[in-house]
Image (cartoon, rainbow, N blue to C red; front, side, top):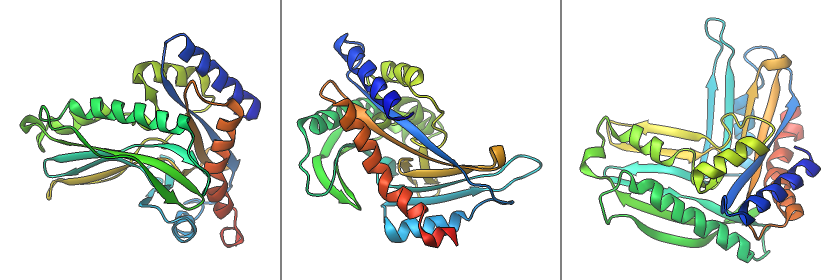
Amino acid sequence: MDRAAYVRGVKHIRAAISEGDVYQVNLCRVLSASLIAEAPGPDAVALSQTLTTGNPARFASRIVVPSIDGAEGVWVVSASPELYLAIDGSTVSSSPIKGTAAPGVPMLPKDEAENVMITDLIRNDVSHVALPGSVRVPEFLAEHEHPGLSHLQSTVEATLAPEFEWTPAMWPALLNGTFPPGSVSGAPKSSALEIIGREERAMRGPYCGGIGWIDADVQRAELAVGIRTFWWTPAHGGTLHFGTGAGITWGSDPDGEWRETELKAKRLIALASSERMSR
């Protein structure tokens, strides 16, 4: 989406909010550029090292899937700061990020409203697998500094019910109850997803998905929300993609939301476009 289309999408979402159809929707756009390279494609290792140096992130990751038996390969490089799901034994946690500002710029009431709504959504999501009465919020509206911007973050924790504590039913129930992550969909989730399908022009791909690891032997797992993520596909000679978005509420200013998507993309796009990466 260009600026006009994105602003129009925000206005459509605000109209849906005024009608009572939804409270919040995360509206995303995907930036794409030709990046032609011979097999196995551009250097994902170099990009991930550049991002790690210039934009260190708690959940930085790199996944490279090679071409096998005629199937085209793909790679994903992420500098995500957001926890989708962590499991440690019987404890499951999620730390939604909603609310963004430039360093030194105060958060708006709209930013806090975003976070409150999504935190409540996550509480409901994890309750599907939780021991009754165990859902808690140990962190609420905490401001975290990241390279080039600040975020509001809350954390929801729960104790897994015995029938879901590393049993065959755990992952299906967890993913059915929590995916896609609330921070990149909206509330109510079903209505938000319907609006996203109508307003967004491109498939999100791995962007906004779950990226991480699972170690069943030690009963631990950590999945990030795939924000701040690049992915490369060999289609059309090779294309590099990067997603960026913003949470839209009734208090959203359409032009301000466009600027937020630019703020989130600016630093990482600059790093990926640096002289080091062009060599």
